[in-house]
Image (cartoon, rainbow over all chains, first blue to last red; front, side, top):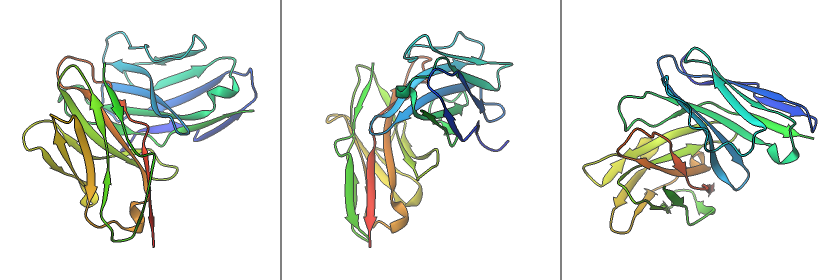
Length: 115
Length: 115
């Protein structure tokens, strides 16, 4: 597609349930990033996939969070045993790997509400 | 590691007035600098970027920013704002060398343009 697509756009889940958030990057973009946006906190880096290299998971806040990228394209962010503090907007972005000055193209995000 | 400080969390201005949104960064290495805009319920959109060369960078929607290396600043300016400029603005940095393409964001500045 023409842009980064994220689904669902909104998700309400009960505390303790698992959720999966999906990101479909721009075709040909080899780098994919997940960020979390909480009110007044800016964008918090979660995880970064770069081509076939091992992902940079340094931003994942706990072992309840995991992500995978299948076939170098679609990525799924999974949050197990959700907690209320996981409520936030989860943003996905992609970029070309070559051409270091390229910025990211962001999706519209998934708004997660844990009740 | 890099860090970004956006000095104002909220900036209210009247329509057609000039505006400056401030951004300072900290880094032990050379960086690329970016400004993104986020309209309500949307993802982030790249406004402009500084990679090298002229320190005055022009972006979309009439915005410009000036890189000041000695003051480690990258302030965003617009000489005359419109109601439609109401949005949240994020400053971001990443190392200019190496293979880590991860962006570090500030906490954002909410620009509100009043009639």
